[in-house]
Length: 176
Length: 93
Image (cartoon, rainbow over all chains, first blue to last red; front, top):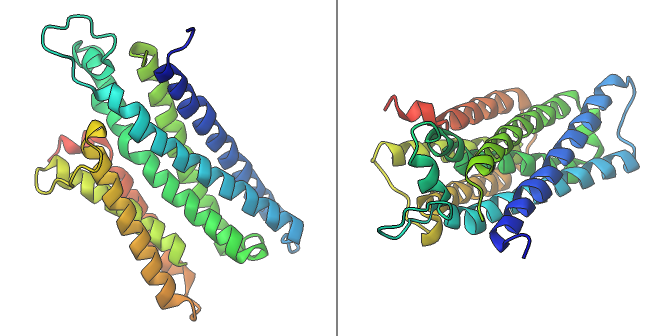
C-alpha cells in the first residue's frame, strides 16, 4: 500500500480535521468581525443561521481532531520500542528523544499538542452554543460579539500553533 | 454566559491538571492505557468543564448576568490555563 493506516489517520487528523477546523475558525472570525463594521442590526435570520452553522461545524471538527489525535494517533506515536531495537523509525517519540537536536519535538512540540487543542475545543464549543442559542443577538450585541471574537481568536491561535508543531514532528518522525 | 465562563473554567482545569501532574502532586487516572496519562488529564478537565457549564447554566438561566465581570474572569482563566499547559513553565516547578 502507498500509505499505511497510521499515515492515513495522521493525514485525516492534521489535514482533514485540523484543516477544516482552521478554515471554520477563520470563517467564523471574519463573519463576526465583518459584523462589527455595520452600523445597523446585523442579525438577520439567515446571517445568524449561517454563523451558527459554521461555529457548530468548527467545534465538531475540533473535537474530532482531538479525539483522533489522542486515541488513535498518540498511542503509536508514544509506543515504547522493545529491548534491543535499533531502528526507531516505527517509534516516533523514542526516535526524536534519542537525538538531543530533535528532543524538543517531543518535550516542547508534542507536549504542547497534548493539551492545548482541548482548550481550543472548549472555547469553540462555547461560541457555537451561544451562536445557536442566542442567534442574532451574537451579531447585534457588541460585547457578546467581541467576546465570541476573542474566544475564537484564542482558539485559532492555539490550533494554528499546535498544527505547526504537528507538521514539525511529522516531518522528522512520521507515523508510518 | 454560562457556556463562556464554563469554557474558561475548563481551560483552567486543564492547566491545573497538567501542572499537578508535572509537579507530582496529583496524577489523573489513565483512561486509555495506550494513550497514557494524557487520556486521564484531558478527560478530567472535560468533566470539570461540562459540570461547571451545567451548574452555571441551571443557576443563571432565569437571570440576566452582567457580562463584563464574566468576560474578565473567563479571559483570565483561559490565560492561566494555557500558560499552565506550556512546557517551558514546567521547568520552573
